[in-house]
Image (tube, rainbow, N blue to C red; front, top):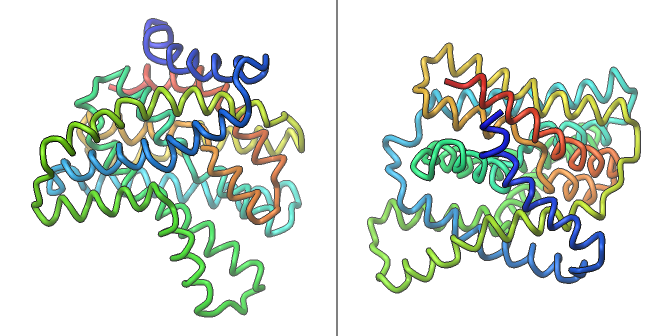
Length: 309
């Protein structure tokens, strides 16, 4: 119970205050849009850039860590895809969008603050290793499968162009890529530049959490409730459970296991709705799943923190 009060509730109180401020009209929706544009296009890319540029790549990129997390994530995608198709009789396009909801954990806006509050800032090295591949991995799978489904198996090289364009127009991926470039080159940034980046980084997570609350006001718990609860079960239980089992089997260190499971246990991110909205499929299910699973994470994250060593 102490973890729930001291670690998780402060994060969700910031989200809740953002929700309340927009719902009551104290903060405009246009303000939320501007705040989210700032965090997602500038502050969070700076956070990812600084984290990746300063990582010890040899120690951080443990194949056991990445395999445990991403096998869990891909398993979630398959459970969402085939569950939506064969359990709930959705179209293949809807099924891909629902699978993407089960694939894309909110690794940054929820995973990082909960991890930091639970285990300290020094514990997030493995989180950043996971996050460095998260958007490229998820978008590559989601866009590729959706385009193949839309083309009914007759897809060609155009899919590769679409996937690469979507991935490298994403500022989060650009921040990660630039971080790798600086890290691998050994280039040392001037002190004032590092200080400026650190100022941006300190603004990133609080502003993003408040903005996330404001974004959630737009969503409504509509659509097929059975599918929505299925997405929540896959995202909040199946993915972290698979990751936990694999981490134990691979004898991951306690620190890496915590990072992998906490990241995998987060609700689907807003990107899940954005993906559904881009393709025009399962939008209500995606929006409702993001809203409900974010609320449920208050409880499920607490349970996972009790289970972890």
